[in-house]
Length: 162
Image 1 (cartoon, helix red, strand yellow):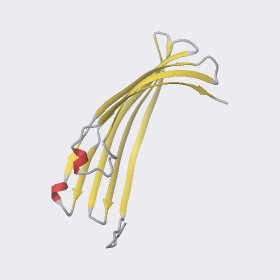
Image 2 (cartoon, one colour):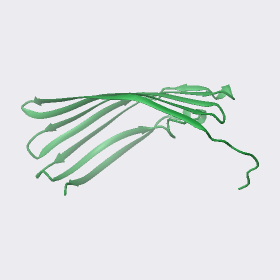
Image 3 (cartoon, one colour):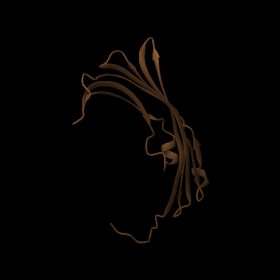
Image 4 (cartoon, rainbow, N blue to C red):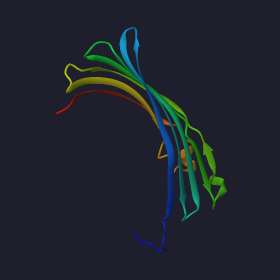
């Protein structure tokens, strides 16, 4: 590789936010139930000083997770999540690269856990996911044109505490 000029890659990145959850334990038809409801709000800003490119992401997501115990060893678990980030890119050198996007997604998971003893838990679950083509910060004008990538996952395993 041959370099004919100096390239300075200097960035300033800042993230602030809040993650809040509420935990509720109550019975449903005399079955033990635990519900967690949450909200996450955060802001990421990234300024690349070498080319005056500014990325801002305001992320908002809400989620709920639930566990319903059918008997001592058997539980069903499930979750739901809604994401809606607001992405803004400001290119101070080339204004045609400015964009704002708000991709959103609803994802979920469902599974079962069998806990015959306190140190052993076989489980299985199915989950969905959605992600951007690259990272949210930095994201380019070209990447912003793509829909979120979606995925599905099936998983089974055994948790063991030693």
